[in-house]
Amino acid sequence: MNTHPIIAGCAALLVAACGSLNPADVARSTNPARVAPRVSADSTGACWAKDATPAVIETVTEQVVAQPAQVSADGSVLYPAVYKTVRHQVIVEPQRELSFETPCAHLLTPEFIASLQRALAVRRVYGGQINGEMTPRTRRAIRAYQQPQGLDSAILSSLAARQLGLVSYESVPEGWERVERD
Image (cartoon, rainbow, N blue to C red; front, top):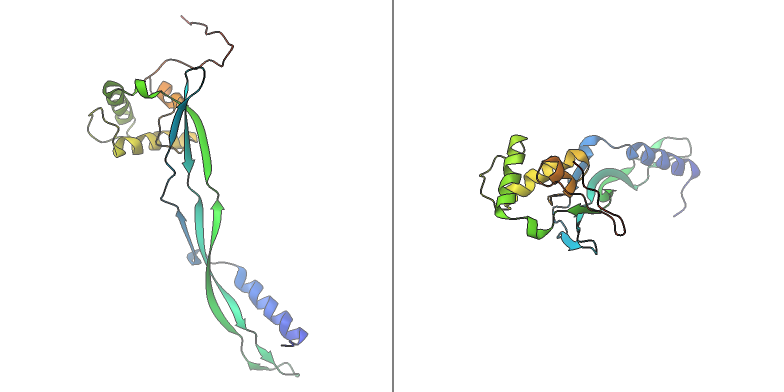
């Protein structure tokens, strides 16, 4: 179909004008399905966690020209443009894989977890029962404690464990000596 240059220009302007989005036309969500975290030990005996942060996806709703306006030679509009509503999803933040040091599994005894729960409760991020079990509520509290520090994970990091006063060690890179402090 041959389109008059003026009509094509008007249609392009209309589409451009529709391109500015109203915040009410955008829905934002995160993918609730998280990748299962993995914990492994390296050659120094330190344990490392790998956890994935889900992608943030926005659903964008916009009006696009389905049929351009028909304009007569004198510039009067014979038929107005017809628009349709189109929705598409846009990835705002891609999925990220996090890798960080974590206390090894053998340290996560019921006594350690109970101490963790007490430390999180004192900081007002845990309100559950002190039972020494790594419950979903405990994991949510770990995430709430670590998130402001830039670690969005429900796996306890070694840094957070040290900050909470639960462990006093720091891993030493292979080939380095550990120096005891007084």
